[in-house]
Amino acid sequence: MSNLSTTRTDIREGRFDDRFVRLYKDAGDAVKARYLHLTDLYEEAFGCEGDLRFFSAPGRTEVCGNHTDHNHGRVLAAAINLDAVACASKTDDGIIVVKSENYPGDTIDTRVLVPQEKEHEKSAALVRGVAARFKQLGYNVGGFKSVTVNNVLKGSGMSSSAAFEVLVGTMLNYLYNDGKISPVEIAQIAQYAENEFFGKPCGLMDQMACSVGSFVAIDFADPDHPVVEPVAFDFGKTGHHLVITDTKADHADLTDEYASIRREMEAVAGFFGKSCLRETDEDAVLDNVKALRETLGERPVLRALHFFAENRRVEAQRVALTNGDFDAFKALIIESGLSSFTYNQNVYASSDPAHQPVALALALSESVLRGKGAWRVHGGGFAGTIQAFVPDDMLDAYISRLESLFGKGACYVLEIRPFGGTEV
Image (tube, rainbow, N blue to C red; front, side, top):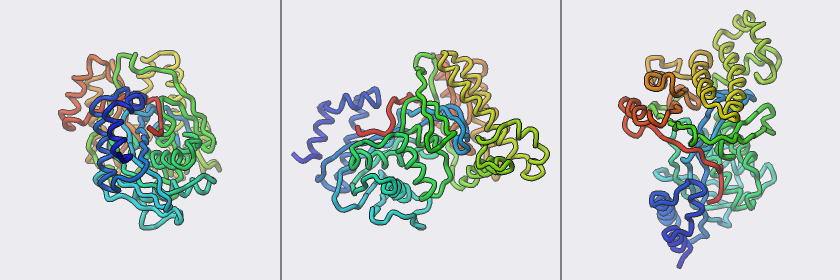
């Protein structure tokens, strides 16, 4: 039998079950069908030849630390049980082919690893950028053929793009570097690809959570050497569910809204001769409010104040979870959400104030969960998703209320995944 046929037989007869359970806590028919579908896509694209291997990189949820990472702040984040998966085989031609379901795919020649203007803000730039950074750092780079399927909802705040970047890095890591490159460095490589090749000035949180996995506190005071600390806490024992709701709003044309947050925070830091807010402090901002207001305007000051308070909340939440104080944790979630709304101002786009689906989702969440659960904007904001911690006995009522407005399937009940980017 060909390797393709052997792989399918192994999946059907349970020889991948232990690996599936490790990642998904499940090796049922749905999981097997997904990986069998990957082999079908591979055969359609490349035929039956090749030594097939599977790879996975999860999406993430930001728990606290909204727009702090790009100014060297602190975050709490967790990998989730939605992921990007790939079926791949090595080639000896130096050509990387990444075909995604329902998309034409990208072909990258590893002899050409400099940014291409025509690839700006396209997935090809991410593939080329990851390969380029591997090469720059002295790691092995080579060709491979792959097909991918991604169930991390695009534009959801669960970082489908970061999962894709980490997936590409994970394939190069295991196919050509024996899996020896650390998850932290894979995340940094992915961020480089997004910043320098794709053209988005993102921070490092998304890639780090997707690459490292589990539930982690990350301190980006030194972004070249972030401090990653696992948080020993089991959400499953709290009597709550983590729910992400997709408001079905479009993220298109919001790049400048996202970029303005980093730009304005760094402008406040620049007022003090610093490159980022972590290099200054809240007292300095408060003592110079008048001059900052006259020089930069009010919004940059408000966003800076959000940064300092959010940094404190991250540490307070880490302590609350470590101590098992879930009520304190929920109170901090609500406080974080209010700060994002009023100070950081990333709940709706200033360019389109008539449309505020995220704000409306938060209002509905409060109407159901007030005094019992917690809710906040999720991810970059402006459009997309919210996050809620919902008591078990309120889950059906909560989903019913939110989906009555945003449609059936808008709510995702998630689990925390213990592993980041990995070979399956």
